[in-house]
Length: 455
Length: 160
Figure 1 (cartoon, each protein chain N blue to C red):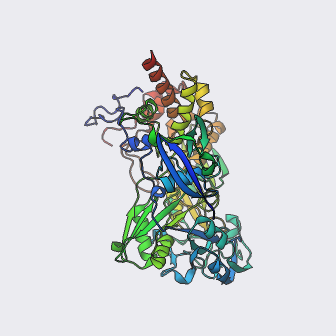
Figure 2 (cartoon, each protein chain N blue to C red; figure 1 turned 30 degrees about the horizontal axis):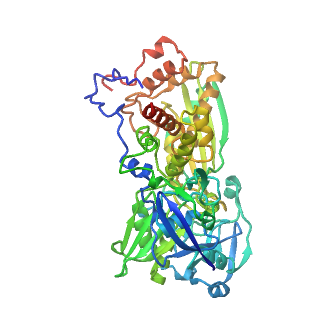
Figure 3 (cartoon, each protein chain N blue to C red; figure 1 turned 180 degrees about the horizontal axis):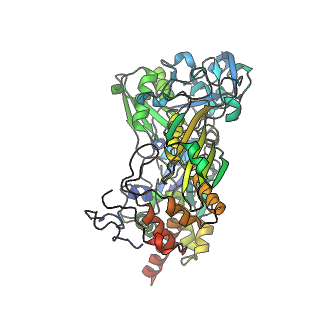
């Protein structure tokens, strides 16, 4: 790889000593010798296995739960329901004041998506736990469900999550996250062309090779060690502490080695209930998703719908952009209010547009709760934005790369959320891309720079 | 549940266990014997993370019953380094940045070893074919393929 050190030579303190230099990964020797310890490589004598009874319905009232047959099954040690969980309703981001608490650890009175955890069975073997889980009888009254974001936002739609009171997340800015900059209608009035397009995406599963799970060992003194493949150690520790109503000093989390996650292991789902099982039985507990559960139960990347309306001049300048974004959170918030908010900040793109109007909604439906995945909230946005950029370039008969040079933000430009651009290098990246892809652009674009002296 | 005696050689050492009939070799190795180098990714024979070598053949330990392994010679990644010296495949995976999360690595190395034992100078297509039963979700495969080709070259240089 050729390393270009001539860019910004006059403003750089220099160094760049690390880039382009190979460095061995510290964990690789363990990986190639099979010695790296993943959570499931811990095995404790007398370990119990936890299996979850899950909702077969997208939306239903739970009339009654009968665990008597399951409790009698050989090998079963304990069966847990909502009443066993000290603080049964939670939301992961309550730690950073994103509320309300809207998700139950074990279903309490209602299920809001197909696959929701209802009853936990702890048994001597995985097989016994599985067989006993099949004997739990749950009486459901099936309720109307909603799977489409626009349907969910219509008046009279089934209410997905009572903790919110409506089928969208209520931000402090109202029913959506908003960006207002300039006068978007004046921008459209001035534009030579207007292009409005809709984009939508489906949920995407991370499919890590190692499934989600944890192993919990009681350590005496009412203290518990939880070996976990969480990607969010302190979210998990603090949420477990709240759910279990136990001080964090009683909980010792061991993690760090994750067999693939891609964001799918930042939710706090397996640890609290496994620790509770260990606390109530006094024995080590293993709770590991089967491959089938991983594919069906773990939270995917959110489905999104994005409507972009752009006003563009014949010379290539975008003069107005109006975006409405919808993020399908599924039945519970998890990390989606944050994802939808990131979209609001992202829709202007790395472009300088003088008139911008953005609304992004975090919508609740009776689908699997979605959550973090590799740049969630901005990845699908970028797909939509860049497809839109190509369409705009085609509309005015301009080369799509040259069109981006015209609109690229440069140091000192004011962004739509009123943060001045600093340290931009988009022009230089596109110049290199032009060379690397053998996609030549006019000389004037190759003479441009992101850096403006005095900016 | 009926227990059955099983005896086999694991990485050169004799092992003798009583196991529940129906136990997979993967569970027997990980939970009874304590060799956790084979990983359980899917438990249904599709990801390859549990690959081991039984009597010279590449096998999925999650689909192999432990009780069928009586008298077998079993090799896992944990037994590959000799006297603390990494096998050329392990060295190549390390140097070629062919591990990320590492979960698929032991299975990949086993699959690659069976290939190199039979085809010391494989083509790129041979490597791709040999690793086709092993899923990796991080690397994008290219560094893994390169590592196997590098290890093959190192082997042939040693032989010359």
